[in-house]
Image 1 (tube, rainbow, N blue to C red):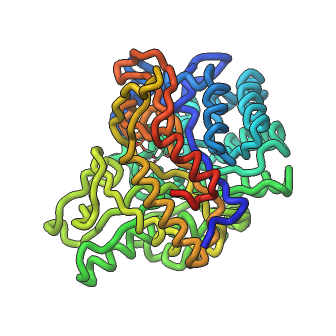
Image 2 (cartoon, rainbow, N blue to C red; image 1 turned 180 degrees about the vertical axis):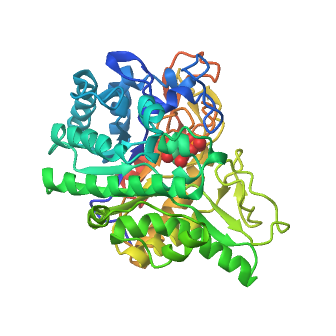
Length: 467
Ligand code: BGP
């Protein structure tokens, strides 16, 4: 069994985690600019200790970075557009030309090397003004504001960008309402109705954006994206099985709407039991019928769940603290459970349900790296642990393809070291390229190739045969 000839190998980044230049060329403030601690508390205004303000200075070094991606043979580069570079407060009548020009230049570089762009339209970087004025996606107004932004991108980059993702990890709004949905109300004050109303607005916006992309250019392929929460029952107790069914349905709700065009059969009971009453119009229901062309998801780990909280050990991951540790999984330094076979399982279960092409839009190992002399006058990182992680995941993706699953591509997360999303530090590195930056903001920002750089180059050159 081989990877398809046109398989899209590459890497992924997000504007807020790598660009820096947070105030340059007319950029507005985004929600990330007031989140110096990742998932932690927001600040009133951007503060010096927020590493994302400086990022890895990709804004000025994108040429060098994309040249390095090309050297690895990337066929695709997934990046996000910073919404507040294009519409600084979200509500200007005209887009900020300087912001659009920056992404023109990124696309020039991609074209120079024959790299297909995959653009995330909204990656946790809503303009702060929209969060503060409308309480983010709690408000229906956001749908048209987002669609105006989408239209600008679809028209400007027509025929230059064919692959789009409407929202990064759309289901993360349930866990991170401010970062993901620009909702300023503290999470503990939000009712389930509030949250699912915001979800509904995003789902309608995603569907309408998909329709718009197709109308502007029928060649456009638009994906929806979820964080691939893969959960196993901790024990064979039927209550644990039902607990997992419930967690799975949380995820399926987002995908059923975006891939099948309507709320799933289980939504009515679920909403009634949680006292969720939504404002859903006839027009919304029509809009939802514009389904996604492919399903993208991020996959880093899996977890266990149980109906009995006294069972098992809590997961140490900051993503899923309420879940349980799998006694069969190793964990990363940040407590994320490593489960390559879970990727094969996730690919199969999503394909079984939706029969749409799948895209592994994020995968990788966040680890502390040590820069050492490479013996040739420069420096490197001997990241055999990262190679081992990725090798096992790619092998399982290959198994899924052998199972018959249609997989379009794989973009390794943080292909160049960048600022972590959940902890806003630089020490949790994912890249094939090391960036000389320390968590206190010092460092030369020089780029160094890690051992995994050459390994991934060979993986791509052999189309996944040489692992
Ligand atoms: C995903 C996000 C990314 C990213 C990744 C790794 O949820 O889409 O933006 O950073 O997780 O997470 P972290 O950076 O916290 O290790």
